[in-house]
Image (cartoon, rainbow, N blue to C red):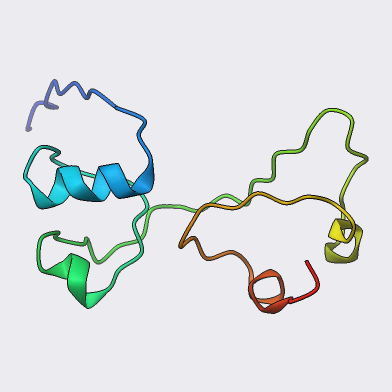
Length: 95
């Protein structure tokens, strides 16, 4: 029976552009979450299996509960550059 490997990781939280630059220059070994495209495939290997995705939403503590898409209207919403969310959100020009 194979023994489990003892591996440790160091995570550096940096903006997306800096993380991509670190990957291009070989200064980072892995990256979580970059969308796949042909340009990035030139310098990154993507695993075929997706990591489990949990839906998460972070709200300011003074924001009322947002339980449906329609409740988002009228709020200032911050998103990650180049991130893909759910289809209705991605296509909604009113947000």
